[in-house]
Length: 375
Image 1 (cartoon, rainbow, N blue to C red):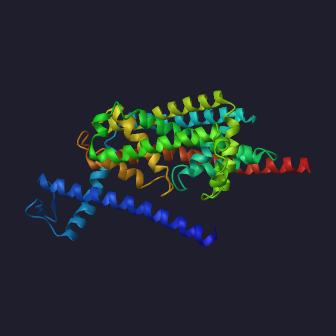
Image 2 (image 1 turned 180 degrees about the horizontal axis):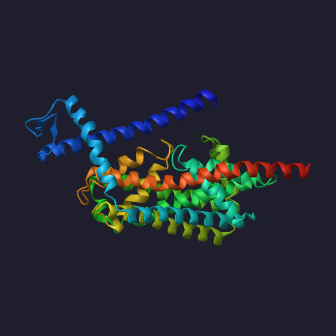
Image 3 (image 1 turned 90 degrees about the vertical axis):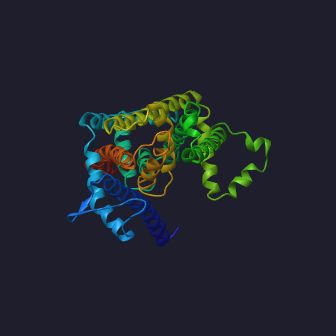
């Protein structure tokens, strides 16, 4: 891909994310102004604003009132969260990142790599930092793979594969977690606002399960001799084929895969816990069990590389999914929930940024010394 096409691809994705965020924020601001007027609490320039089904301001006036009084209502809601739930939610994110470090080290060990816990944590925090800058919520894996490859000069491909396998297991576990939560949340699944999204997630989980089985077990090409040829004809088929070959080596270490899967499920519970704690702090009437379906579904969709860190996509989904009649969460607290959760993640991204700036120069020097010794 040329540089111009890369720039265009990144630019339009960022623009889409920002447009989605602006659209949902605009809708919420206008709705806040409408509700204030309905309660007789909206006074603009000394004039009582009437806004009901029979008498509404002009569209341009609605927008002006929304952006004049909406931000204040949103900020008031964000500030209403109690300090303790906010602090706990931030701590939970840090613990989840720590579990991710342990999971990666399990896969590294299965691949024959002896990476210290400190170095693995450093790379993981740097990756988390870049997740906030790159598209989707998996963009930091590019940097994680880069630093993993630098840990060895002879097994770079295998080191990169550990990152890919780590991500595959993590996303698959998230999809399985969401699918398992459909039955205990069947009443939510029957709601039109959740039915389609949850069904798509369930189908994606089945497809991902098939991919994981093929990736780690194989055997398709033995029964279907043209499987490899068909695979190569797919977009990026050669890359997918190399990934499958590398993943197949992990299929010979089922214990490591099971352990990584269990750690992923624990991380999923912590992810839901973060949102549940914040919801309590915002006085949102949504149960932990309901969030066990909603949160992983949104996280999986936000992982699609549409916008940096999934911004815009995630906020829209939280507002829509929490607005279903069975939950009926107001739009402003739902948006605040998403933004506060993002703030907790960004806190650890800043930690990752500090780690990146402090240790980048040191490790570059160490790499040069190692290369000089080898030559």
